[in-house]
Length: 535
Image (cartoon, rainbow, N blue to C red; front, side, top):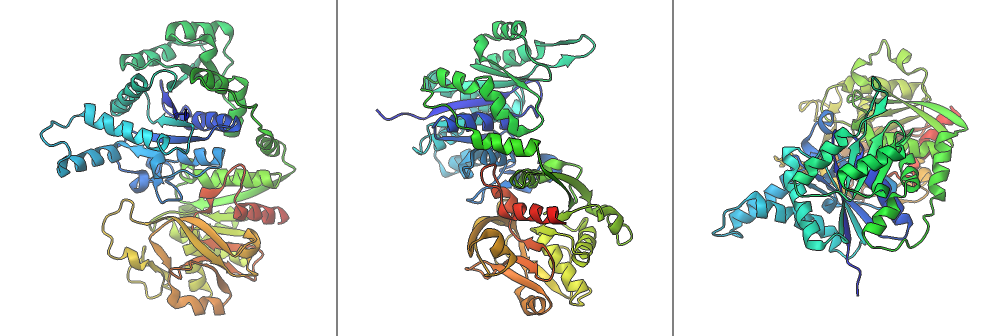
């Protein structure tokens, strides 16, 4: 008999930001290492259809999948841990659910019926949860539910979980509840009451957690584990300690030590096929914790108050650092605070500079000043998306003499529109999901820096933009030392620019950080760090 897909639901309680995404990704990594085909999806309770229109200050970075879905940044963790791409189906929002149900109602699918949260909204949630499982590609689907138990907006998702558990049975669908056991310094002890209240809230919705993962700053002794188990109605071995660690990449090993994967497989009545082989993972951690070298890198951007706005870039530097056995000290530098007068003071101590992606005109002049400084002073430079566009604008202004050169995103009437809106974007009026999104091919010029980095002439990378290099100016740039070394074969869109006379100067229109994983660090980041080490 063919093995049916099993489901694991991860909920959170007490407070947000406990790390449901990291626990989900760590468990998935362990199950994958035991020979199971695993994927993870995120259910987000907000009414936006996707995070594509959200300001990074609201929600951190918007992560883009191979097939062009704008998704929650947790999907980045899933891919970085599992080294398996996610898709449209891996991120579901309340907005998507209601949009579908309302479209169905308008089409007449529910003719004569009163459309309600139960059963219509919950049925659509269940359908979305099971899309990945019914594909036949996975043995186990882990579903992370955003927010915390008790949030009004999460209630339909929790009800859908209750129904799935009832329909499938305990062997096929289990719930892991991530909760907090805080340490009160005044009392000098850990407190279990917040966890008890959180589980009680879950029980009021008809859901009994099978496993509790307890975030804590201090180890849980046997007495506390027994108390939590007794009052939350779970087995003692299903009370899992998740103690604070120095890096998120420690968490799979912590969960392995706590036997989370074994408890899960036991609950799902699945065999522990093989002992997990995590040697490569341990070697990666060894390189992070015991580096032989150290470099200082400046990330120049305008969302620097919230590091989650650049989450994938930050993680890509960790991967690249490990590949070079090098500690990467990444410092965020606010582009709005950089001027011609202070740029040298702000950047003189760095071994390399990355100019970050973004939208809109705020902080642009600081990015242009930064790029002029690194170009003239031969500092290793890497520009991503808007960072690449800025190095085109800077080169046009200061090398080609086009003093008013700009992007039409910031100045519609610029005399020299070296960056302009893509032709297919000109009639687009809707904002959500309408940019150039997802994976596209790119041909590299043989002998170029990009070709040397990738070691091949054809690559595929992920995009998220509306504006592009204006090919009318191609000859001017090529003639004066900025080469266009990566071109999309279908649209002739410029993907990569380089300055040959510079030791390392590369700008890319795509987002390489989105494809960097623990097992496959992105080659541009790896070579950028290597060059920074040489400096």
